[in-house]
Amino acid sequence: MSYAVIQTGGKQYKVKSGEILKIEKLADPKPEKKLEFKEILAYGDDKIIEVGTPTVAGAKVEAELIKNGKNRTILIFKKRRRHNSRRKNGHRQEFSMIRINKIFSKDGKVLAAAEKKVESVKKKVVTAKKEKK
Image (cartoon, rainbow, N blue to C red; front, side, top):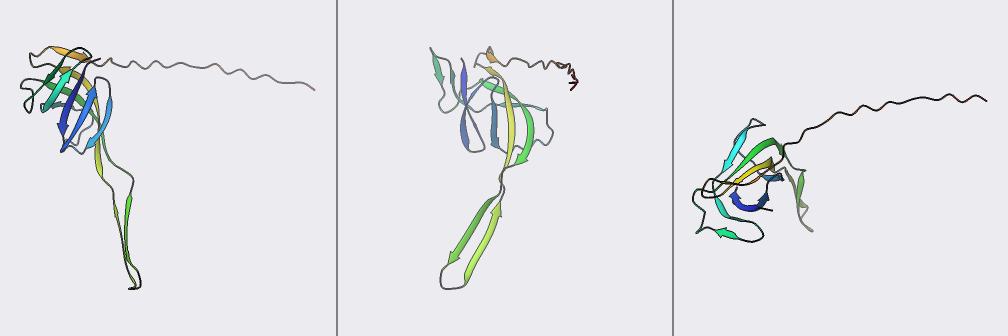
């Protein structure tokens, strides 16, 4: 199973193909848009690993933006006892949800690609039985 370590939003993430991540908000407002992460710190699999100094030149990760949103509200409450002083504040951190599609090596070869999901619709037949008493 191939993986890569990417850097985005000041944080580092270990990603695999087909994985869905919540990362810091990206500037792209349109969902279903293709993204490329070129700041790859390392990539590899169970046997070998390629580590960059600090990044691996030529390696990239291709992803798809699923949605932009906000997390739950975090309340910040500060109180100074015996002073009748209190302050209440809230914060909702914005995030982007992405799906990792492909991981490319520094040579441009595809190390891992996500399988495309084909959703099949199954219809259930419901039969009603009447009971006679």
